[in-house]
Image 1 (cartoon, rainbow, N blue to C red):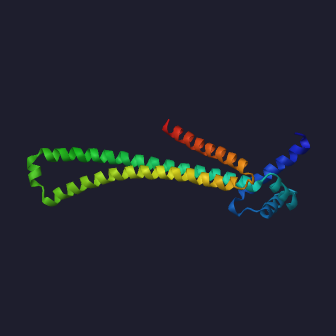
Image 2 (tube, helix red, strand yellow):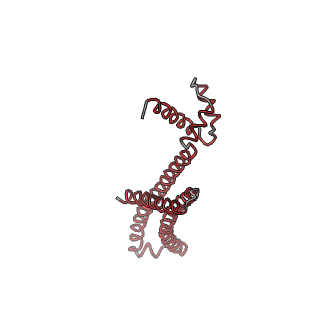
Image 3 (cartoon, rainbow, N blue to C red):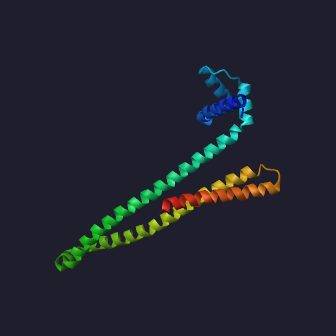
Amino acid sequence: MSRKTQAPNERARTSFLLYYQLGPERSLRRLHQQLQALGVRISLATLKRYSRRFSWQQQVASLDAEAEQRRRERSLQQVATMLERHAQVARAVQGAGGSALQKLMSSDRRLAEMRPSEIARLLDLGLRAERTAFAETADRHEIAVAIWNVVISDIVRLFKKVNEEPDPGVRARLFARGVDRIVDEHLDHLMREEG
C-alpha cells in the first residue's frame, strides 16, 4: 500500500474511532464539530465519504453487537457465580442446622420439652429447604434458557443481516457460515468455563 493510500486510511480509521466513542448520540456532524474544536482540518463531506467507503454504520453495529454479547456473557457468569455462592452458604447453614437437629433429636428430654409449634416450625423449615433445592435446579434451567436466548438473538440478528443479500444462494451460504460461527463461539465459551 502506498503512503498516499495509507494516510487517508489511517485518518479514516482514527476518525471512525472518534465517531464510535461519541456513543449512541453520534453523528457525522457532531464528529465534524469535535474534530474542528480539536483543530483537525477535515470537511464534513470527507467524513461522509469515509463513512460510506469504510462502512461505518456496519462497523458500529458490529462493535455494538460484540459489546452486547460480552455484557450478556458477563451477566450470565455473574448469575452463575452468585447461585454457586448461595448454594455454598445454604450447604453450610444446612450442615450447622443438621448438627443442631441431631443433638436435639438425640436428647429425649429436649425432644419431650418441645412445643408443638416448634415441631411444626422444624417441619416447615425442612420443607422450605427441599423447595429451595428444587428451585436451584429451576435456576440452572433459567440460566440454560438465558444462554439459548443469547444464541437465538445472535441468529436472528444474523438472519436480518444476510437477508440484505439479494442472491438466495449467497444468502444461504452466508447464513450457514454465520450460524456455524455463532455456535462455535458459544461452544468455545462454554468449554472455557467448564475447563
